[in-house]
Length: 400
Image 1 (cartoon, rainbow, N blue to C red):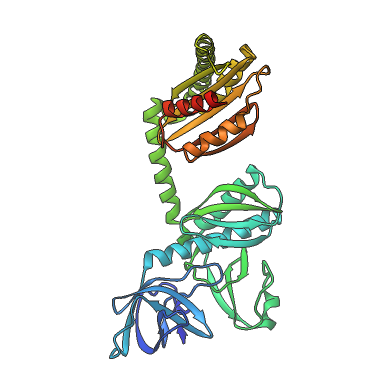
Image 2: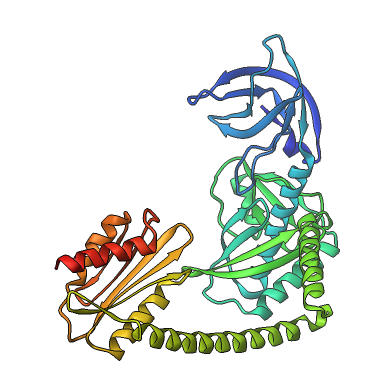
């Protein structure tokens, strides 16, 4: 099979002969052509998509020495001549990212001797993993600056097939994984690298490169970056976010940091005030509930149904109540949207087995929970109202 993408990576359409059409083990249809400009997945670069005679090419893989163009449905049996059309936007994006990776890896190695251990060309962002445990902001800015300098110089990117014996003529950046059909991608006086991917004819085709983030990965540093048209896309998206935030904060872009700092400070103050107010409200509620205690079968009981309360509030309220009077037995129910929360507590001067009570309550409401004989908590469904649950607890206590 003739690989047109190696003859000229800028071929976007071509006409060729259909060699065969078949199905793989999973039943997917694929076509094999005498020539193809579709790049199959490999070497870190994703496959091309496009059409064969208007039939969508969904995936391209090189398997057992043949390039398979996977189709949504087979071509008509009468077809012999096929016109292929590459999804050029996708292909050129891959070429920009792949060439950008070569430049970035070469820059890190030339400046700091950091070798690239792996490369991933993602849909939105690409990454390289560097063989180092630390990378400073100054270092990545220097590497990024060097890459964009080489891009502006518009140096030639040359692809060359060489023999194993000829390899000694080139200062390769890393060892090759093959010993025959060796293809080098060369940026003169900067990068010499074995590669089977597609690239622009010159570094100017990459347009620009921007590092987005650094992340520790075991004993390496993962560098996320974008190149080419993705840089403009990132800039556009970030500019939209900045414009929206500037409007919301009523501050210019260079004053947004101060505005956010002030807002966070105000938010912390408000959160503290709200916490203090909740604490005071809880004290008032506890005092009011203590005054409403009643005797049931000789035990001092406090029962209450509350609305939209978090479990932590119920627990705090129950503990405060039993610490106020050690003879109290407390049952609190919170009716929240679609569920009930239950907390039971007893003081040190009563011996009511709350684990038994809780087991009965959870059976009523298809719930679950846990605790000890003196303190239980849990939740369940709204199969009963909070008042109905309280009534059933009182009925259990009256039989005790």
